[in-house]
Length: 287
Image (cartoon, rainbow, N blue to C red):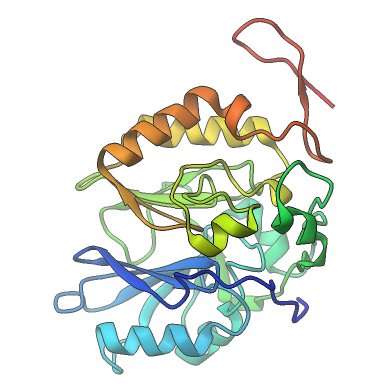
């Protein structure tokens, strides 16, 4: 992985929000990481995603404030392996001496065997999309620290949560869901800010959008993933980018996204865009 840093700083950078008593979202530059575990009741906690390169010190400081300096996480869970979600993973895993888990189909990018496709600067979108070819796309090698998530859907060290395969943005993208309170950690399956727009990223304009356009390689799979998450009827959601969302704003926005994904999320053009040519409700997608 290179040391490239996105030249964008959200006004929400550094801000944390307790979404539930045991779910805390922290914005680091333009991406969110989640601390899962009750500060007073949990014997250990779990970190979901690790933010941008250079985020480790901030994440460790917030973890110490929330859980105490003597409580390290039981595991790190990755929704996927893009550079803005694994930026501090190697440093944190070594410092805390903890295992890292991801979907089996994401492992080639986390064991140094494969690189992601180069971000698509030609895709329809704003300035961030145009800058995206500057972003790192190299895989990383976590060696023996990386493990595949169990096929039964359980999440290590997080009883009550299950992982859901939500591909499209990447082949092995996962989201995490807890039935008890219908809490969702969606990663980049959908986001609550228009991530390709520089203005909306900086201002953190709240609106449910599909996955970041410049890195999403399979739009049909991405649509099916959004439908799957909408069917869960989450009561609250933390996404990889944008502010946490709940209630009617979330339910209505996610339902609309699932219903009109081809119109509101899929870009009109770009390297990974496929054309819908069927006039029926079942789209026929061609290269």
